[in-house]
Image 1 (tube, rainbow, N blue to C red):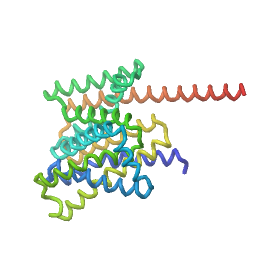
Image 2 (image 1 turned 180 degrees about the vertical axis):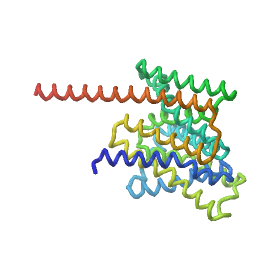
Image 3 (image 1 turned 90 degrees about the horizontal axis):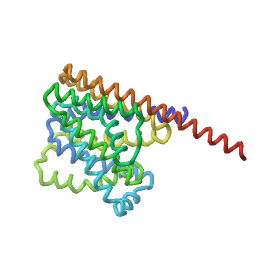
Image 4 (image 1 turned 180 degrees about the horizontal axis):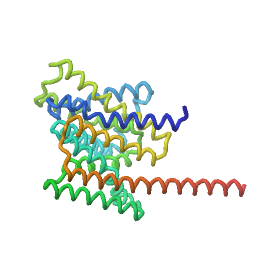
Length: 302
């Protein structure tokens, strides 16, 4: 099997795990979300530490948290912790559909952040996609009479996380290990001082809490593997498997209500994502052709 094919399989597997993870956290709906988050942080650190020790890279974590970049790592850790907490809470409180909407919105939020903070430029079609998504959220707000706070907070926090990670300049596994390491004291304080009573009381719940570490780490490792083997545009397109599965689980497994306003909002965002994805693919192909032409000219001149 070729490297690109393995990359596609890896990212599909990562997105399937992410997309179905809401079922997992629903099994822990009787456990307070902060307690689930604390265990997710601790057991992620254990799992990532094991992976890095096998790779002989454990010492690099200390180098990261002691470097001048540690401030960015702290901010990224807070952003992803907030994002994890929102997702767990949304699933536990019957708002998994809002969570899926947030992850549909996220790619377009990332685009806007790129314009605002990185000076990136969008094509007219991409601006149209962003506008459609904004109208979809506005329509949902007016239709339901409630701002989809969870959706927007998930999209914005994950967008901020991606922006901050760009300043860390470390691989995904290494950087996330540094993040959960810095979050571990807060997790331990919560479990020691908070009303945590689940772990050790029931073997099923205890096992689920422990496995939240591998559940967090495995798709990230798969994603990292895939990102080195397939194009960025392909990664972006395949990632929509995640919120799609979240949406299907919320609707057909959890039985959450899907109104006509949800239909209009999701339809608008799906259209926006289709427009943006087509535009991104065209840009990538144009860049490849330009690079190929430049390479050909260089060879000719030699």
